[in-house]
Length: 197
Image (cartoon, rainbow, N blue to C red; front, top):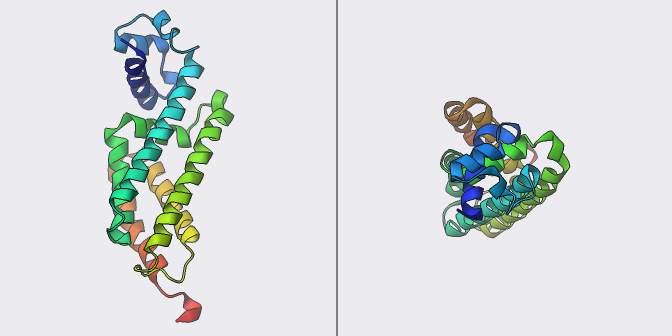
């Protein structure tokens, strides 16, 4: 059993139980090794967690890039709307995404600054990617009165809100909020501003 097995088990434990609830003993037991064997790869729980955080955010960054790349010819409305559902599926089916989302909103107190040093560049990169995607779509999409960066920030704010609902209340309320908020968001970015009407 190697580092990859430890990483998978640790992702599951941290995503399911939080930083405080995950233990190296449980991670080792899940992998089928003794706890001291973990120290051959990691200095301790903090080191394991921070390496996992860097890995998880890098992996999700790649998956998000792939999502938008694969849909560059799809309508903007479908791409953005489907992304909100896609993130919910990622959270449900992917421990890396679950880890990333959980610790974006609830970083361990003892590692708060270290986690923010990973989270903030991820969010800035996501904003840049989304803004670029919006700029590329601008010629054929109906949001001409708004700056792509403003649309990107609004979309990320919507995403944050429904992801928090998913973390706190589960899938049913997540879908309820998404279904209520999406039409308002889309109308807001596609309507002519009041002073131009």
